[in-house]
Image (tube, rainbow, N blue to C red):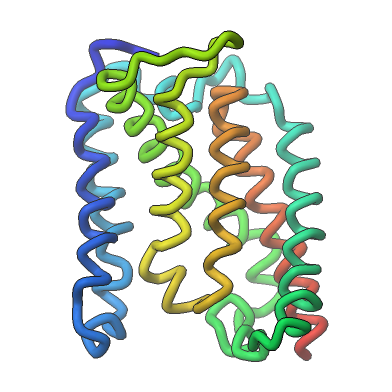
Length: 228
């Protein structure tokens, strides 16, 4: 990780906007622009950070020479999470009295199959992982590394653990995520932790994109079929 990274603090902007969203009155939280504002700010911050850092691509986990590393793990992780989360949504949550029928009306479920798979799913995975894992998690790890020096025996740093936790919570509490998937947004906490761990282990964004895309495809097909 480069020690001379500039303006890493820009990652705090979408985090602050995400927290601020929940201070708004309920009526304002229905506004679609305000729901997307943290992500829009994140991509804007990413562009500024990119322009000010010469080694932006490797810092985002996009080194051309290493893009194939860990892809098998990403595919396996995506398949496993897809099956586990489909089970949770379609069997566990209803058994506990939770509503899942609203999923049939979400933008994702209404999208035609030939659009959602694979094109839109892959596009979402690339954009979301570039934001939440490549930019947000990476910058949080850099910032936490300045403040927390504890390193475990296996070389895994406490700063990385803190960055994983914070990035997973910011991901799971993304306003659009919460407003769209309601109580099911909690599933994104363990998704975010697992994807963060995958990213920090391989230092490669491609396996994480693969895991995200494959999981979403499995969820889309299973939920759409079950609720048809």
